[in-house]
Amino acid sequence: MAVNSSNKSKIIYTFLAWTIGGLIFFPILWTLLTSFKTEAEAISASPSLFMFDWTLENYKEVLSRSPYFTHFWNSIVISIGSSLVGLLIAIPAAWSMAFVPTKRTKNLLMWMLSTKMLPPVGVLIPIYLLFRDFDLLDTKTGLVIVMTLINLPIMVWMLYTYFKEIPNEVLEASRMDGATIGDEIFYVLLPIALPGIASTLLLNVILSWNEAFWTLILSAANAAPLTAFIASYSSPEGLFYAKLSAASAMAVVPILILGWFSQKQLVRGLSFGAVK
Amino acid sequence: MGNITLKQVTKSFGDVNVIKPIDLEIRDGEFIVFVGPSGCGKSTLLRMIAGLEDTTSGNIEINGQDATDMPPAKRGLAMVFQSYALYPHMSVRNNIAFPLKRAKMDKAEIDKKIANAAKILNLDSYLDRKPGQLSGGQRQRVAIGRAIVRQPSAFLFDEPLSNLDASLRVNMRLEISELHKSLATTMIYVTHDQVEAMTMADRIAVFNGGIIEQVGTPLELYNKPNNKFVAGFIGSPKMNFIDAKSPDNDKVASIGVRPEHLQISTEKGMWSGTVGVTEHLGSETFLHVQLDGAGTFTVRADGECTLAYGDKIYLSADPSKIHHFDKDGVSINKV
Image (cartoon, rainbow over all chains, first blue to last red; front, top):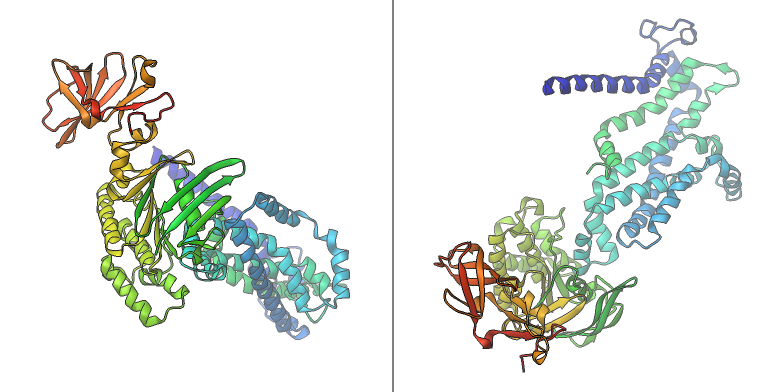
């Protein structure tokens, strides 16, 4: 009886999981499919899922019309650059919060997180003016800086929870063994926390890759990443669904592949601390 | 050299005084054990000596030099932790080499020292394993190996055996004692286990509530405890206490007798009582005796003891083995 009912609930849960997964994935699938349709089929009132004339025309057109690889390179520089700079700041910050906490550490962490609750539009004008005055508009440096700052709270939080899992005694042992703070972080803390650091890095690469608000506002031609490349296809000349889809697919697929290969690492990173 | 002097050392966490002013002189080459119930401050004091906790006030001197504000790395001490605190990502070899690499020692010298330590601690065949692949006893040996290669002026042990099972604990106890004899280096050893304290120590410091109740050799503490706390803490099974019949009589408020100093008789004695639970250990027997109107006594009898539950017996003790305490628990029969 018990086996039966647990089997039944297993089937229900599996079905539910696949349904939710399907719902979440459907827009991406639809975009991918549309990117292989002609513009006429793309806006057809009775769209077909697979039965259409598959074409690569949109991809050709998109590649010839705009410098995809420049945008692609910009996206890589901005997402990886900001994640690396972020780690450089977040690792020592998380170290001090996890291992030498003060009475206010918890408050500080909450305050850092609260900045993520702020609507970005709220600081749009000051940041835009700062960028203008420091000549950072439409530069990769500028976008790396802003992406680093935006994701820093999440990085510190993730690393903090990872570091909290490391027994303090191991670090104390290294101090007794003559390690300086630098040695302690380099030779002991980082190697032990490597899985956590890797998933922090990955998640932040993905978040920065997908970020559209600031990248669209602060870049024009030179530093524009793939998000701006997609946006350029929702043009005032009218909507070109198929081409827009092709551009989106080209922007999304690299990060999708990265996510696919690193999903184990990511899931472990995101559920860390929650599951013990 | 490994003299450590504590002068009026205190530690507070906020308003809580964990260590009340403590003075202690630890001599070069001595094996001193800090013993006491949990929360008595013994581990905190050890961590203060190590430099892992700040000292609120007072001075810590190591080899005549003021070390109160020195970082741990500069104090020349080595510590063995309860959890072993090995570096999980490094092989045994690299764990032991870590302090030597930090000291910028050259490779050949490091290899020589590791080989030497591995020989002393029987770690030869494990050198390339990770700590996760070792048993508890082996891990503790690696932790000790990591400590000895540095040739520190003193070793600090923070309850190093409490994660081991009973038989291994006895073995490791002997190994540490032997290590002390062969290295002749100062060792400070924290434990809550009075058996470890009695068997290993040159001197024992008994802690209670952030102060040291008494410092002395194991036998001094056993024979001449300063007060009721030390009398009750040292010795196993515990000393039996009984309130004096007439407290006005020369200030004696209570007396204490150790279980091994009680004689059993079926005819007469100082106290009468009924045998309760008996614990047979083979070589000896512990009897829990319900005294008539005076609580329970534990009595150590020989292994062949045939007394059983409900038997009526009499107990007596040599007057010279009876400890007397005043109303504050201070010992009063000692000169």
